[in-house]
Length: 138
Image (cartoon, rainbow, N blue to C red; front, side, top):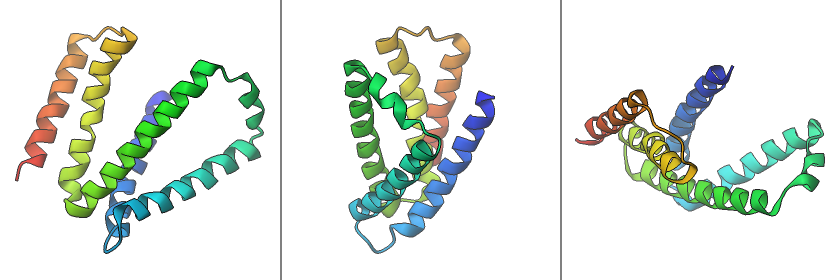
């Protein structure tokens, strides 16, 4: 089932790039990111409240809170840089470079989470890096 969720994530990430490229035309990229963030905030909290999932907030540990805040900060910075890159670059170049996050995440998961990386995963990460370079170079 995870694979279908991942495919849907990829589809919506692709749509994000297209919609964002059109949306940042002739406006400040930080303003565009702010608008996008408000939409996401309303959408996600609506889902949490409708599904009555807010009750789990009381079970958050200090570690949960710290790392969710750090994740939120990293996401916010990622979005700010992504929107700026889309504003000045081509989607066909920006999106593949952005997907280097996959290869970086594999490396960081080994470093910080002590996850083992198989040969297949190393080859896949290498292909992602190679593909991003090929698509990014004019």
